Every structure is written in C-alpha cells, then in structure tokens.
Length: 247
Image (cartoon, rainbow, N blue to C red; front, side, top):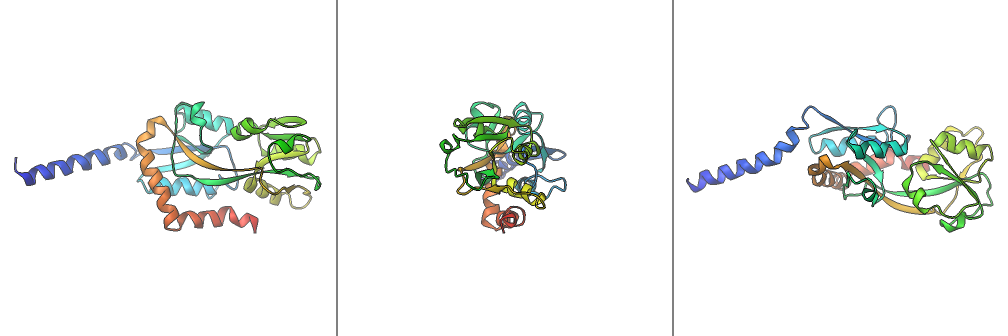
C-alpha cells in the first residue's frame, strides 16, 4: 500500500472512531436530573442548570434537557440508568452511587447557608448549629453527611415544606443553598421575615455526573464546559439566572 493511501486510511479510521459514539445519540435527547427547582430548573427551561446543560451538550452535538425530580429520586434515576445523569453534586457521591461518573470540570461553587427568622442567631460552621432546631430537604447528601450538631433535626420533601416549618416557628434554622433560598424569599416578599445568615456555612464545588453508559462523553463535556467559561457563555448564564437575585 502506498504511504499516501495508508495515511488516508488511518485518518478515516480515526475519524470513524471519533464520530461513531456521537452518531448513536443522533435521535436521542438525554435527560439530566436535578433536585433543585427555580432558579436552577424552571418550567420554561431557562434556569441556570437548564441553560448550562443545553449549551454543554450542544457543543458536543448532542441534545439534552434537565428533568426536575425530588433530590433523592434524581440521584437514583441517574444511577440506575432511568435517566442519563444528575446535576449538580459534590465530589465523592460515586462511592455510594457506583454507576455514576463525574465530569471533572466544575459546574459551580455553591454557597450553603442558614436561613432564620431570629436575627440574633449566629452560625459560622456546622458545629455552631448545635443550640438550634434544624431542618433541611431529604436527599441533600452534603447536609446528611455534615449536620451532626443540633438540638433537633427534621427533613422535608421539598422547599415548600422546608420554609413552612420556619414560617410557622417549628424550627429555628433551615439549611439551603443561597440562590434557591433567596429566590423563595422573593416569592414571599409581602409577609416574609426570613433572612439568610452570613457567612455561608460551607462552599463546595458541584459537578455533573453521568451514568457510566455515557462515560465516553465525559472528556467532551468537560472540554465543552471549559470553553463556555473561556468565551463568556457561562458568565452570561450566571448573571441572568443567579447573580441577578443578589442585586
């Protein structure tokens, strides 16, 4: 075989191997679950996670959309393969959910804060929760792991139940992420006395996880998210969905 023909054949093989995994997704819409609603996942599909997922996968030539589920169910569905992935979780959940693989480019630095009605409450870390009645949403793995100090502890199914406890003075503190809590407070602006406490109890990097059947996509998705950060797409999405809440 002539050298030139060998080169062409080699290039064909490389191109075929590169494109073949993507061709299998041509008529498929992948579903990425999330346990967090507005401002992350919205009915209009214009929340932070909605837009991040859409843009990430588009850059790899694949269609994907977010699916809102209860927090624990969102992980179970991704792990069992009912859905294709889960956004956004801390490092290490694959130790329990063994079918999930992390995309190494982080989705966001997430502030976890305490919300309270009593302005005199002061918290700075997990141990400082010890004198208080505390509540958080079932399935939030960080809280399940870290909340070891409290007067009493209650877990709810969703944010509505969570803040209802606080509004009705059935708990002193609810734990939530900063943006979801502020969004909820804005919806209740007429009669809401709840405030978020500073500084955050913790800040963690959160990641997208895929079911292992999609492991070949992970390098492409990591590169896609990195490029979104470099060209300004990521910052524009952050400003219009999350940062606007704090202004």
